[in-house]
Structures are given as C-alpha cells and as structure tokens.
Image (cartoon, rainbow, N blue to C red; front, side):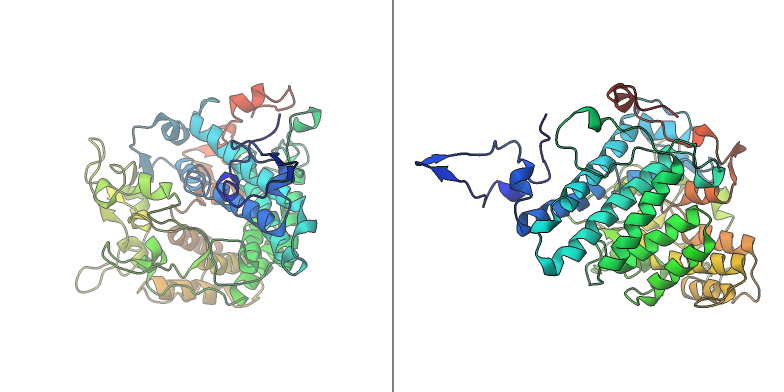
Length: 469
C-alpha cells in the first residue's frame, strides 16, 4: 500500500506541476503525494526534510513526551504524577500496559521521523550540489536521534552489558513506501543500534555547518548528541572530545541568569525575550505552531497549562544547597527557580519546576551547560584536563548559575550531583541513572520495569518478527 505523505500535503497542495497530454491532466490524489512527486526536485526534497523536523517536534516525541517519560521513570520520592491521564501514570508507576496509547504514539513518531529522513537520503542526487552535504547531514542527524531516543527507552541500557545479544530496536535505513516482506524488521542487538547511531552522527557532524538557526541540526548539535551517545556507552574519551568540540565551536553561550536559560529567556510572563541562548538544539514553539508538553504537564493553569500534573517533592529540593542571602533568597539559583503553585486536590500548593513555566516557549533538547558537565565528568574519570580541568568546568557552571562559593575540590559523586541539579527534569533523569548503574526506588537500573513496552499493535502487525520486552 502507498504511504500517505502527510508531511508534504501542505507543501504540495499549491504550486505542484501537473503534466498534461492532449489537454488531460494526471493529477495526484489530494490525500497523498507519491515519492515520485515528493522527491522530484531540490525544493521538494528540502520541504520533505522540514517534515522530518516536524515529526521530531511532535508532542509525542521531542515536543515533550520523550522528556516527560524519562523523568517519570525515575524515583517516586522526588517527583509525583498528579494528573488524570492514566498513560503517564502507568509510566510513573512502572507498570505499563502494552496498549498504552502515549507509548504507541511515541514509537510511531520516532519511526515516522526516521522514514522521512530515509526518503530524503534516497533522493540526494536531485539536491543542489552546494547544499547536498548539509541536507544529508540533517537527515542523518534526524535518523540518528530518533533511533537513539527509541533505543534508550525501549531497550536495556548499554551499561547492562550483553550488548550483542540484548534486543534493541528495529534499525530502519531505507524508506518504507509499500508494505512487503522487507517491511517486517526484527529488533537488532543494542550494539548494532548504537553503532548505526554513531555512524550517522559522525557523518552528520562532518557534513553540517553552523548558523543562527537552532531548530535544525547543525555541527554543534551533532557533536553534542554524539557526546550523549558516547556517554551512554561509557566511552568517556569520545564523550569528552565530542563535548569539547561542541563547546569550542563557540556557537552558543551559557546563560548567566539561570532562569533565562528556559522559557525563551523570559523572567516573567510579561517579558518579551525570544531567545534561549543555552539551547544547542531546540524545538520551536509559538502561538501558531509547535508543542511543549513539558509546559502542559509541569506548569499550572495560571500560566496556560493543566492543573500541575507533575509535582516536585521535598526530597528533590533537599538535594540543593539551602543557603540564602540577607533577603532570604537562595544562593543556588537552580533551587530558586522552583515555585509553589496551584494543583489538583492531591497537590494543591505543591512545588513546581519553573523550567517549563510559560506558554509558547521553546523546548531545549540539549544545552551547552550539559557539555561542560560531561567534559568535567569524563576528564575526572580519565584523569585528563582536555579543554579545562573538571574542577574548572564545574566551577564555571556553578559560578554562572549560583551565588555559592567556588569549590576547592571535586570528586565523581560531586560532579554527578551537579549534573543532576543543573539538568533536573529536562529529560535525562532515567538515562543518567542507567548509565551509572544506579537504582530507582530499590529497582535495579537494568530491570525490565524501567523500559517502555513494545506497543502491542506493533507486535501484532510485525508478522511475528518483533519480540516484547
């Protein structure tokens, strides 16, 4: 069956060229556009590429659900799901039905993005030669990050070992344009999935350029994501070097006011700031387009969200330095960003994360601050000082985002704590626990309850090749 290219419809409803013979038109059905039309020119291929970013930014992927689920899979002593939706509650309770519609949509969004990227890669020969490398790099980036998020959520972590035998996810490298025997792809081993992700990102970094556009893949974003992948694999040398490159591309700046790192740089609802300086790769959100489900679920109705679906609990707040200045303000500005807000009958007056406070704000997928923390951790583990010493990097971030005194020494536990506090509730929670072989409320990092189940509809439609977690 032909796939309906929903991501091309608006691009092609106007301006399409119809070929005529003896006054008759061969017109593509308005409900779909075949690959022969969609991929026929440089302009069209670039429109298709834009569609891949649209899939990544969907609410069920980088528009918020990927990040939300990473946090809901962490400790129930630090956050609590208070919302009425059962699908996130199942994730929070670590008892997820195979028919969970949020999980199914997440899987589908990831593979939609992968399929669109594969279509772009299949049509590079029609792209203008001057732009071909960048188009290829962007498509490879999209394909890589979609595979990466899926394997992190649906497969046992790399740190669990047995990477050549533990099932990962299906690797998709060619476009699916009709359903045939080749469409049924089994889960590749975790090792193979990571190898493909690395191959795509390494090539992407080579081919991409840097510009002022933060909503598409650039050289810095590819290096930053490579650093994440290597860190997840416990390849500290490569993770350090990739983080160092991301820093030294000098494309972004660590925001000196921690609160302005989020909410498009706004300090309050009336603020007109439109830029988040720290975001290496961002999902753009405006009143006209984009989704920020982190705002919907983490903020409150006073700021255009639901009634505070996720509460931050005292056990998390206690992790921060509680020192205050003469006026009672916290010296740790990361702690100061939390606020008390309305909630439902369970959580009225609970603490909320200020990172997702305001409506129509970009959602940063990866931030420059993370690269300093990764470089610090890797340098300390390796006994090196590439770019800076571990202590220098930690004090650099602390010096910008707190008014606390500089540290005179640092160990691994200290770095991991700084990482947790700096990146709290941004979607890295469960992944950091898994890579350092921690536990969640007494459950081991590699327990199957900390994985999302393969959606049942995918199992049923797989012709018997997909196995469940």
